[in-house]
Image (cartoon, rainbow, N blue to C red):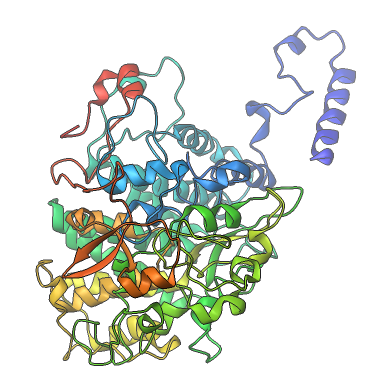
Length: 590
């Protein structure tokens, strides 16, 4: 940047020497600073401009697409690890996470201003469109211009897909606006029109981004393979939304999702991380190290570095998440490939150690087994017995009894405030396998080869039996979901594999399974033996099929969760937005 400023200063000086008394000099652009009129010339100019888009996208609240961890104090509330708190996966009780509890329980109302991850971030779209209006001015070859346009269009399509998923119709804008632009007061653009533009953006990105930017160490810039993963994610959401909520061309979107994922699987340079150690490999890529460069499954991540950009997420996460839920834990299969409702191997949950016996190894690599405290350094290598529930003296206490260790790192969890370099995985290859399997299953064209390529590859990593199309278990808990047992199992695999990576809330909404959020959140079994074991725990319990369990929200504002099918699949538009432009109009039911 110093060199750039020097270059412009020298140029300004030269012009002053040559200008003399030329009256036209007063008409010229100021040359002591970079202006829009003089900027868009070289490939470096385009790269520098697009760097600003990455910078804007670091605000996960305003631009919730490249989700990672916000910095500083905001590490406690905005980020990829927290969004499962909108769902039946995690049960927070901390007051700073009230927003997650409100939405999860269906007790949120029309806000006066913008809510978390809400109807905002439009300055990001404006920044993209400024670039789109100017990239073609660069004096470089078309392929070079197109890769920066593709980068911007990926961001624009991804951003709009997020807005559509939350709010339905959205104001599509694809050129720079000013204070007098009529579009500022226009109605929201219909969902199907917006998503057609989103698909065009994502397709252009997937066709024009380079396979590798050649920019050295990670995370670098987003490449074509990452664009394919984003495209598969967005198209899968839209295809299943239209299939279950109504809308045109659902199959087209599912075909686009499958094709994007398959191209990545067949031609991309990524693979599942596996060393042949099924008891540790799943957890290994989430055992946070400062640098994820070279991890073959990690496609994009966010780097943090002391003195530049840091976070405090490990400390906040261990204290605020409340723990995983009984619902999540019970979805892990037994080692015979059967759900706990069908498997003779299931040992029950009379004590927490029983929960892990004969279960998918991912369970013990996600939820803390009492014997693994020192293995993972939980509670800063605490020697007290775990789990520890709210009210117990000392150690790390939680609400549910199911401590999350999938991403736990004791070094950064107990570091000085905002000095941590805990990275975040934004895109990983495992998702592509799940997207492909689900899209093909929803299309009704999936084969055993497809399952072996996708779901069974994930199971191979942890030594689990394959999913066999000709012998799919029928879990009685899900027979009323309105889908085939095969789709049930693919959805289960997605929940288990992608736990705490930002998918569950969107998945439940696109599947039209919001009613699952009416089920209360429970923790561990809470019989007399548990009360004696967890002395001084300050919890309450409720009966579930005649057995007592910790009832997380009993006695709070979030008890008795509700989900109104007529409104809760979309979020409300803030009153501030409607007051500025009444043509926006509120979403149905709000």
